[in-house]
Image (tube, rainbow, N blue to C red; front, side):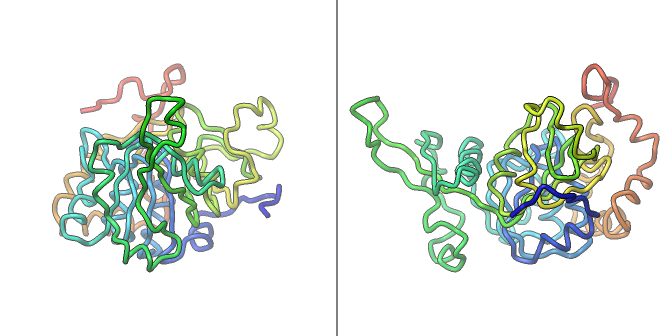
Length: 325
């Protein structure tokens, strides 16, 4: 039972408590937005291995977890950061070198899978994917699925619409629910009990949070347990889902956190360049992540001037004069 108590803890403790080698884990965010990067960097520092990772349309977080050798299996709709990496580079290389197993779904299918998990139902129907190879191409064999009781026996199923006489859809696609062992999300505001308020687009974070057996929240602002009772309709995730709350300003850096800071184009370009070469990427991991004691040390290395450069304009929610080239 996730009680309405104080769930604040440090990031190292949260990762040590909730992430184990081989666990099924989900991360929130979308491409360049609100990836839980501070938590991801801490997992890399702690040497987490063999994760079965779920993501909606993630970018930087997926690429760095894969690049650091933390991931064995991945279920995802899209992995990329737009112009910096149209397809995540370490992710692509790991697939080509058969270092990880990957199974792909459409964006909508992944959202429905998390929603099914949140609803407590085994699957949800959709028309998404009909006429595509998403239906026919499986990343995980039936033999592989049988080896992990947390995986469904089938990637998905196509069945006759039992209500065809009522509408013109003859077939539907059934997509299985996802219930991760733990989900990490980064939000703008949370209180110590785990109530969350997300500014801007929520992507699939709410569904991921509610589908998970355990939820770790990192946040820009950590409040007491009274403030978010004002305008409670703006709190997308209630405390009943939360297991830990971690105060990490710039916890999504180098990705963006709407109303707080934009993405860091300098960092992302440097990462993409390093990601293309194995030795350069080893140096990147050592110098930027493994060689830093925590996220604060990484931010100190980047420097105040860079962080001020990506600071969000109060009226727009993103950096007004950021060089996005």
